[in-house]
Image (cartoon, rainbow, N blue to C red; front, side):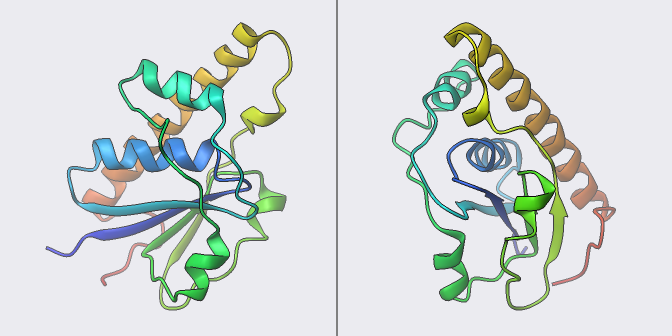
Length: 152
C-alpha cells in the first residue's frame, strides 16, 4: 500500500507545522509519509516543546527546514497543508505534480503575550485544535472524503 504524502507548512516551521507533523506521525498508523517546513525557518518554539512533551511527544531535538528547499528538490506530496493564516498561506509555492492544498488557520504561538503560563495555556489550545484537525483529516483520507482526494 502506497503511503499518502503530506507536507505541513507555516511561516517559521517552529510551532504549528511541527505539531501537525508530530500528530500525523503519531496517529497516522504508518499510512502517511509526513514532513513539515517553513517559509522562513527559525528555531522550534520552546512553548511548543513544552506542550508537546505534556502529550508524550518530544520535539526538543527536531530541526526546522525550508519549504523552498523541498520544492527545489522536486518533492511530491498528495497534500500540502498550510497551518498559518491565509495571507502567509498564499506565499507557499505550488509543488509539482498533483497535490491538494488545504489551509488550516491557527494563531502563531510566537505572537502570544502575557506570562509564561498564559502563553503556555494558549499554546496548549492551539495544540489541541491541531490534533483535532489531524484526527479529522486522517478519518477523511481513510474514507476517501478528504477535500479533493485523488488516486495516486
